[in-house]
Image 1 (cartoon, helix red, strand yellow):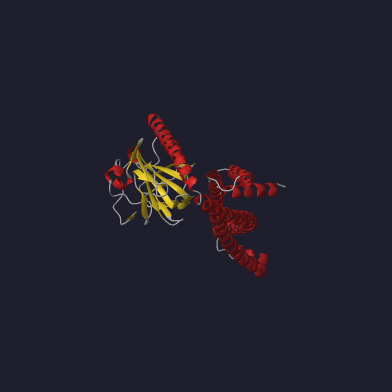
Image 2: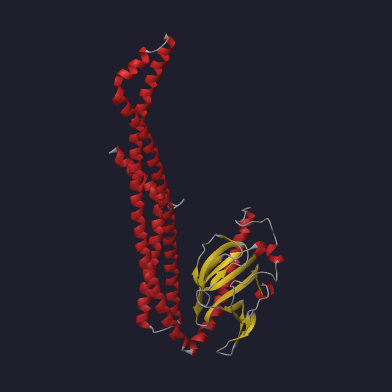
Length: 395
């Protein structure tokens, strides 16, 4: 019974080890929560599809479910990597135990063969042939210690066998858990692919109706206000942290670095076409004028999007018209916004460096592109004045 309890405890510890500092239950609850969210969006999509054909709201539902699916997949991929690392560690431990066990068994085998050939007569000869009383005492103690060492070897062999069995049981459990995750991942990837294809069809239908572009423009105006509120909230949180003397998680060794690099910062994508400039712009289809709070760069869907400077991922959000977006805090109250992302490869609180891939570009009613903004406090900046001049084709 004691061995069984010990095995169960070790197995639980093993399963906890791949979850890092988080408890395994917490990890499972997180995955279950995401799964419930996905199922909820699944139901909403079914209800909306019955009532409406192709609307921007229906597209929003697809986007939000896809975001949740990608979060779940990212967690599953992280778990997969963690378990694979633990499996490698366990295999190394098994190899190490087997080597030690082999060495002890080899030494003990030599002793057993020798004892079989000579038996106690050999031990007696050692004592009788002593040339002095002192030598007799030394040999007597030596034989006694030699016998104790053999007893220890037998005990060690037993312990190593038990340790080896424990590690093999751990490995089996890790492999079972890995297979479960791989199956879940494959199922969610299949569902993600199906939803992505359905989204493409919905988007194509939406683009055929000119009224949707006008509606999207109105939604964008509201979303701009929502983004302003989101930025204001981040500023307030940062100010509270400063009051409490909480240090930021990114380096303060080069304060003002972001500001000093004005006009030299890299673009968020390696190449593309600048289709939307900062400020007042004319809509290409509606021919109406509106204010653009950043710039729009046309790129193929799935293009890698990079952080333009060192910073910390402040928030990951979703807004109508902006789609999936993330905001990075930089030095001296500067922030960058990356919107219309199909995938996000970082988490809130992650420290990023210049060039870090933070996600992939997506496709909206206005085409395959990314939206990019730079803020100083509550003031919007013209990104073109901050980014290094490049051979981006002007529209």
